[in-house]
Length: 206
Image (cartoon, helix red, strand yellow):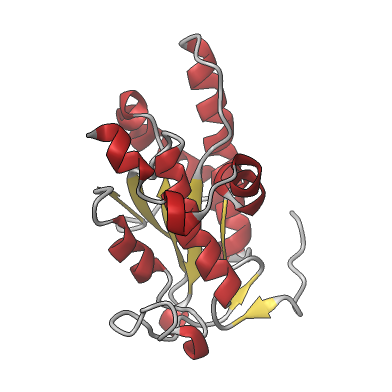
C-alpha cells in the first residue's frame, strides 16, 4: 500500500485546481466525452486504516482497466478516462465526489461493477456508501460548484461559489483534480480556450 506523506495535507481546494476542474468539464463536452455520471462514494478510512485518497485511487484504477477492456471487446479504440473529482471530510465523514464519463451503453455494467470495485478497494461496502446520478450537461456547472464547495475562501467570490462554499475538512493526499484526458496539457495541446470554445458543443449538437 503506498504511504501517504503526512505533510501532504490540505484544508481546501486551491484556486488553480478549481479552475482546472471547471475548464476540464467544458473541454470534456467539446471532445465528445461529457461527464455524464455523478458518483458519491463514502470511504471507510477507519475500517481499512487507509486514507480515502488511496481507496479511491484503487477504485479509479479498476474503472480504467474495466473501461479499456469493455471498449476493446466492442472493437472500439479505448480512450483515456475522463473525470474530475474532489475529496471531502466534513465532520470526519470522508467521501469523494466523482464526475465521470461512462459511455451510455456501459452505464448498466458500470453500476453493477462499482460496488465490487469499492469492496475490493476498502474491504467492505456499507448500505449508503454509493450514490450515482445522471448529469445534465446544461446544468453541470452548478454541480461543479457543489463539488468545489471546499475551495479556499479567498477565491470564493472570484469563482462565484458564494451559495456553495463551506469547509470540507482535512484531506491527506491529492484532494481534487481532473484526469489527464481533459486536464491542462490535453486542453493546451488541443488549443482549447475556455472563454472562446466552452460552448462549441452546443453549436455542434444543434
